Every structure is written in C-alpha cells, then in structure tokens.
Length: 299
Image (cartoon, rainbow, N blue to C red):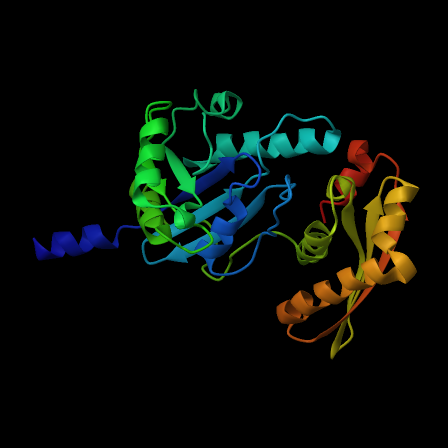
C-alpha cells in the first residue's frame, strides 16, 4: 500500500491553461506572481497585453503552461483583430480555462462567456482584487456569479498580494491531464528577448502617457548589441500623428528622456549590466491597420 501511495503521489500533471477576461482584471499580474518573475508587462491602461504571452511553471507536481491572453474586447483595428485571434487560440489550445473578473464587476459579461461556453473544458471563475474587501463582499460576489456558468471551481484571489495563488495552483494540477512537461525545467517563457525589451519600454509609455495616447503607440526594437560591459539598444516609439509625436517627445525632449531613463533601470536589472537606450519617436500613420507593421512588431 505504501509503495502504491508513493507511486500515485509522484505522478505528474502537465498541460496548458488559458488566462482570459476583460482588460485590466489582473491576468498579467497573476502570471508574474505565480512564476515569481516578470514575463508580462503591467499597467492600469486597457489592452496592455497585445499578444499571447506564454509562461511556464515547472514543479515536482508537473508543468503548467500559461497563455496570458489580450483582454477580451470588440475589435476595431487589425491590431485588435489579431489580439482577439490570440484569445481564441488560447481557448482552443488550453486544457483549462481561468476566467478572470474583478470583485467589483457587477454583472456577467455575455460576450466574454460566449467565447468559451461551448468548449466543454474545465473552467474556473477567478475573482481577483479581493485584498481591499471583507469576507461578506467576497461571499456576495461568489453568490452573484456562481450560477451564470457551470464553473468547475470558483477561486477568490489577490494577484497583487498573492492571496490564494497557491490554492489556485493546486487546483490547476488537480484538473490537468497526467504527463511529463513539454518544455525544459529551466524555461519560463518563450517570448524573444527583443520582444520583451520592446514591451518593457512600452510599459513606461503606458504608465506615463495620458488618455488615448497609449492605444496609438507601440515600440519597435531596431537594434540590440552586446558590447561586452554595455548592452546597446536602439528602439523606435511609433505614433500615428504629429500631435502624438509632440507629446511623446515632450518639451525639450523631456518625456522621451524620462521613458528611456525608466526603461534603462529595468533593462539593467534584466541584463545585469549597463544598458544604453537610444530612443526615437517615429510617425507611422495607421500602423494598427498595417499587417506588415504588425508582423514586424512580433519580434
């Protein structure tokens, strides 16, 4: 009996988990927290995640491959159409779906639910951002949302504080199929270094640019060169109009200098060496509707 128990305990479970939900519900914060490293940029601006980010966690229990998908929204540009294709791909490829909502959400999102209601896959309702509310509010939210879909699990968490992240991870392993991992143990993401650098720079734009400007901007890393003690990075911030370029450049170049300074700090932590960031602002009209530009930005 003891030998049988040991064999059962050592069986591994591995598979794919889609993180889906509207924008700004904390999917990327959750992914960074559970991986204990930053693989996805975070901001309070809508549509921060623009492409599927793959994060990998390997433990003694097995391997979880997370798809951090763009926020669910109705597409109006080719960029947004591409983002929603990534959402659909994540749902189709996943073994488990984690549907994220905020605790302050008041009603179900019929459009979001319609995307996975016919997939017949284990689906968890993840109620995020519970750290600012008491038990009564949490129980009320569970009661409000428990019957809108046949959830396999309902898990209230705080992605920011790490509350119940371990519980959610244990439940994921419970539903994943038996099997060894798909990627080497040391892997934690498959995104290219060039793409990650562009995202870190774009994150600074998101944090410091106002209103609609973040939607019309993106970052293209034109050159990365390891020069021994120094990593040289040349990148372009794309905007669509002259008025947008004027804002991003800032008075006497102060805004773009701030973006470069803030990005350099994170990049030096990442590369563990001195980094020189050469930033330029370029007007690329209607880049969000250009398949060629969108393909170039894939990194």
